[in-house]
View (cartoon, rainbow, N blue to C red):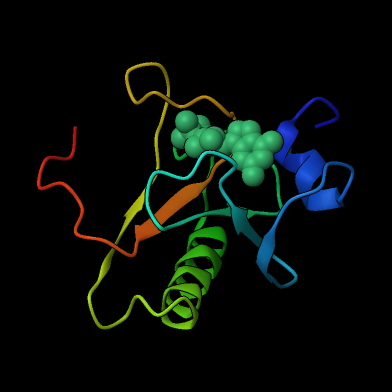
Amino acid sequence: MDDCLFCKIIKGDIPSARVFENDDVFAFRDINPQAPVHILIVPKKHVANVLEGADAGIMDGVMRAAAQIAREQGLAENGFRLITNCGRDGAQSVNHLHFHLLGGRQLSETMA
Ligand code: 5GP
Ligand code: ZN
């Protein structure tokens, strides 16, 4: 996807603060953090969102990466939140599947 922001970040065409990378997954700090730790975890394969073919392999890789990053960022003891937005009502602004890892403070009890 030539015009996809996160594909460009994964390729390194747009700089990012990378925190994790393996063959299938890339993770970097959100440019507009909403918590002390706010990391975006994305599959390298372009998938628009969870409605569009996030197969078991992709999801497994993303979840494993999320757990590893959470531990490495010191979030295992107090916990964290892992969110994916989808479509208009979900307020998804970048159409490349991504999960927000949020932590480092007590988060709101409301989800929406
Ligand atoms: P969404 O709203 O689609 O769930 O999340 C997109 C996220 O990408 C937002 O939290 C936004 O701050 C972040 N973002 C948008 N553009 C950039 C960018 O160029 N670099 C980084 N690191 N994050 C970005
Ligand atoms: Zn993409």
